[in-house]
Length: 107
Image 1 (cartoon, rainbow, N blue to C red):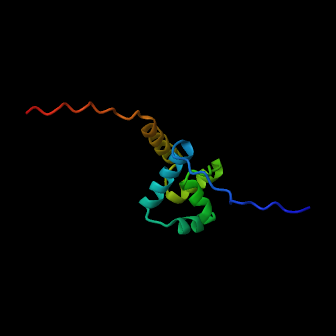
Image 2 (cartoon, rainbow, N blue to C red):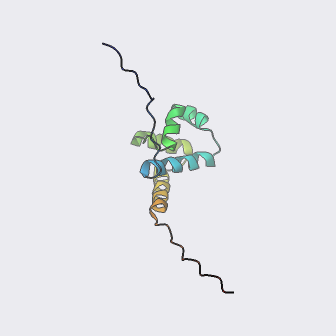
Image 3 (cartoon, rainbow, N blue to C red):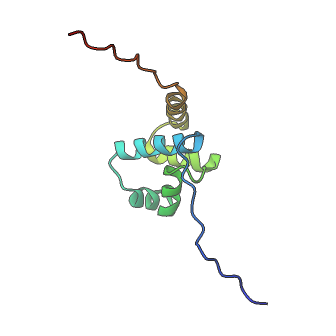
């Protein structure tokens, strides 16, 4: 049976919003706060560097076990990461303020 060849490799979808993206932003903030690279962070926790990258870009979601391990590595409570995720989500959901139209200048 002949193999199908893909014309285009599968692309990863990078979410702009949502809980996965917010979690990734929160994780990145905590990691950068302790000034550690993705690679070193992954090595210290026994994760693959690409897994950390996928989490931070919002492509993957961690298991509860992974969340606790990540929090331990960051020396924060897992709830702190979740709280920051919730705060980022709330920021995303705020409606953009509409600016009042500029009044014509008086001459």
